[in-house]
Image: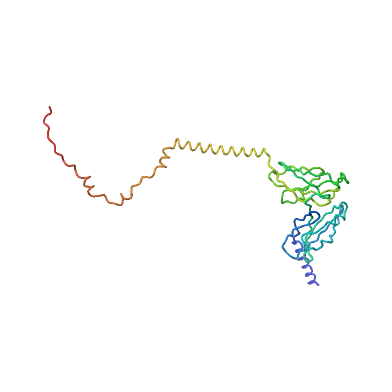
Length: 287
């Protein structure tokens, strides 16, 4: 019995480990109710199951046409008839031989009745998210419908920071020169409904004041360097001319043939012999 228990425990642990390492699908989005995703691995035996959650409910149900499908897309148009306003949430999980990955929620690339219309405007140090209040949800539920704006740096999780608003949301104290991303979803009271609008990103520009300060600092540094070079050059030209000439003058060397060839003997005798005595007449007087 102990052996059987240990075997079962090992199987459960292996299955749990395999399930934890089974990568979920990526880039899940809808385009006119066609749900598409990208496989996280290149394995061929993966299947996918799509689930939906109706308006103002937290219960997830399988989409009948998208249960353990081997394809990377699925038509989910029927789900808009399963809920009020057609506002449903969608998610996809990967499966392999009974193992399941964590489900990943889908987003919408286009605005519609259940996905917000979003426009971004980036300014130095801030990002403004403009939202469209003219939609059927707001018209019917009025102040009970708001927008939840998730934001963060590109590459970071967008679930940690968010702000709620109706017409626009301004996010301040952002790092200039960094790229920030947002995703927006409708709120009914305090519950998210419908598909999130897919992530949109903008680069926070640098302020003109800081840019001018940087340009001024660079200009001052260039001028100082040029003045220092010109001053050093003038000093050497005026006060170090003799040293410069010495540096430029070629070294004095004895030609090699003077060291290798002996000095001719007739030149030596001509140099050492006394000059020949000349003849001259004695002048007795000069009248």
